Length: 164
Image 1 (cartoon, rainbow, N blue to C red):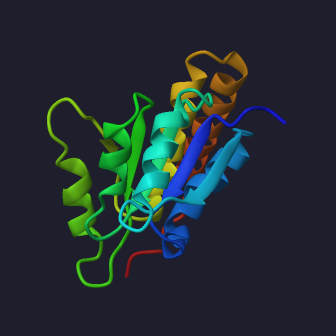
Image 2 (cartoon, rainbow, N blue to C red):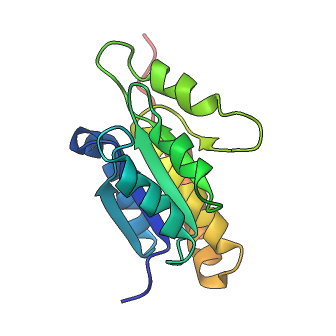
């Protein structure tokens, strides 16, 4: 089994509904990954250890999804030089806008790449990780090009209902 290249972490199991879209993309591209709950608030020691060990374990990117206060992506980024890709998870009351603001407002010097709220953001974070890995992997670059070509073909093949 190849070494894990991308970590997909979330603050709680309920975030899986969103983060599973990142995992699906990573699986489609054959990227070795792991998915786990690493809560910034309920398990801070484990979260810090995860971040501190990420580079040494060979991780090339961490996709971190979080809702509400959304501290997970920023706290991970503060403890590792591995790129952190933040995904705001929709929340019950503010639909993820609170999470988006929390993740995107990182202070200068501790970057977190921030994606759209929800499933689209999770998928795009994974595609961004694929693109990062593809810079040094010709096979993966071809696979990503094929994926994007398929996206274009699907858009061109769209049939709209007749106008009334």
